[in-house]
Amino acid sequence: LFSGGVSLPSSALTRRFAVFSANLSELGVDLSQLGTFKPGGLGQCSNDIAELYLDGRPLTLARYPNLNRVTGDPEWMQVERVWRDNASYSFGLRRTRGLSSWRTRAWEREADVWWHGYWSVDWADSYVRASAFDPWALEVSVDDSTPPVYGIKPQARVALVNAASELDAEGEFYIDRDSGMLSFMPFADSDLDTLTLSLSSSCVVCVSGTEHLHLRDVDIAYGRGTLLEATSVAHLTLGPNLDIYGGSQSGVSLVGSDSVLVNSSVHDVGCSGVSIVGGDRPTLTASGLELSHLTMTRTARLSRTFTPALRW
Image (cartoon, rainbow, N blue to C red; front, side, top):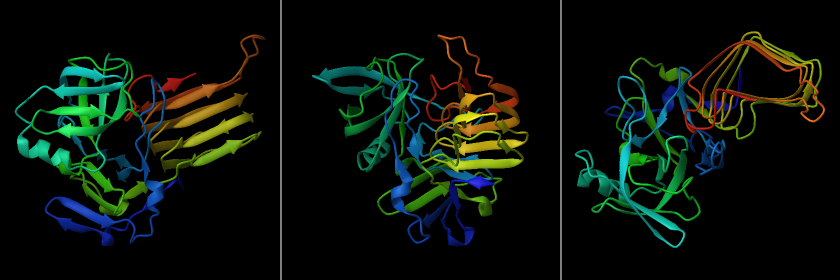
């Protein structure tokens, strides 16, 4: 296993009801490696957050609404009204039964709340940070430094993310980036001895300017950046039996010529599964890049649009 993460001992966990906790600082984790949300633009893979994994499965950062219990797909709130003050956006949420005053007042006390949404069209999503929130009127002011992609329209689908008060479902986690306190609710069938936190902000396996390399029969996992990055390479053979998973950004970036990625799997990544770049259009020079017998599942977990499983 090539890993960009750190294993967390189950012996360091404390439990209160269904929530397990650990102090990452006491476990030697550098809190500057936890990363932060970044808004990004259309198709940009700018996620830079440490994530938690159990049995190789990613936990979901605490959010509202929760993921659908049956399908695991995201559920959403809806924007009811929108207004602007110069360049600043604000929006009001459609009131529903779940938006009780005790819940929304807890949101007001959150330290670093973000909103994920399809703000204007259903083919473009992005994250924005809230600069203010009115828990009674359900009105959100968007930080000017994180404008939404294509503005905001009524009926847009949105969700609250990175909220400690919403840690209430199996498979969710939250990290207090100031204190280093990690809290999570494990999957019912998970092994706590497999708890892993992704930390590396660079690629886990980085190859540059290399020729005639053969990499096979290994797992590459747990990073905040791209997991396998090969740049300006030639005559590489990647695979068989590479298992690439557990990244906040993309699984594989392959830039070069006459190289293959074969009989391998990419799954549970935040953006694209595999991206390849090669060849030259003006001269019609072929790249010689080949992908064969790949399995790609559960890609685009965090940036959900314009981050296809296969990009070229």
